[in-house]
Amino acid sequence: MRSKESDMNEQPTKAADRLSVGDVERKKDELQDGQNQPAHTTDIGFPSGLRLALLLIAVYASLFLVSLDRLIISPAIPRITDQFHSITDIGWYGTAYQITSCAFQLLWGKLYSFFSVRGVFLSAILFFEVGSAICGAAPNSVALIIGRAIAGLGSGGIMAGTVCISPIPLI
Image (cartoon, rainbow, N blue to C red; front, side):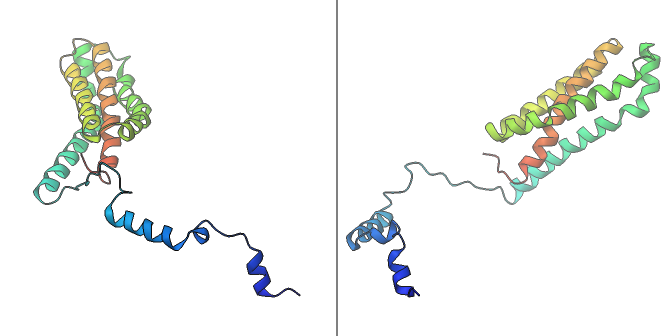
């Protein structure tokens, strides 16, 4: 039988075990002097107080508008079909919005990870508002469907953004 001491002597030594006392003292001095710290450090500040309250109100208001736009089409369909005299496009009024919203949520999520959260969220709101403006000024059914699709594209970004903004500060 082999003893425990002989097993310990045969184990390979770790890099930390090979450092001399002088190396350890030098590393301690470097850490105290701050030489190993990155040249540029920024403190990430999370919003608090009034700024946090305003931020949450803005995010939840945009989420409310997206949800309202998603559901408002159902009671509006009779007036829309009377206005545009197009009963064949009824299915596309809601579907164009839902398809683009769902299809682009993953892309928006990736954009949130690569770019500024604030900039991506504001661009999603811009897409949503442009699509809503097209819907409001639509002269025919096709323009309304295109506007709903563009609004859905922005809606996907807003939905993904509300998930991202909770854990990530807007810097």
